[in-house]
Length: 112
Image (cartoon, rainbow, N blue to C red; front, side, top):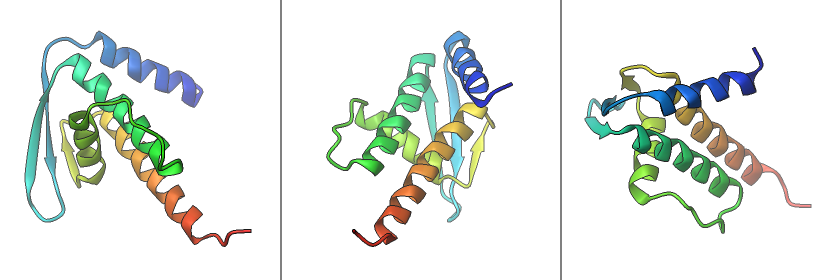
């Protein structure tokens, strides 16, 4: 299965999910935070992670997602533990972490 097909399957799973789900985050300092999310909220958080990744490459890019969705996406990316574990949360965290790493590498490169 290609990575694109896997990603498409994960999005389909979120779209087909029913009801409200809660996500509990535990951070490295021991603090905890939880969010109750509908199916649409989960999709908004996924789209927010793409906004965050785009902004890491282009700081002038205006985000289309809601501030709450971006807050949740950032919280998921910085959490040490996410319960219940989900491929969606892993994708969101990985996308944001990868974008921030790329941003850091770009800043370290000398300008030509």
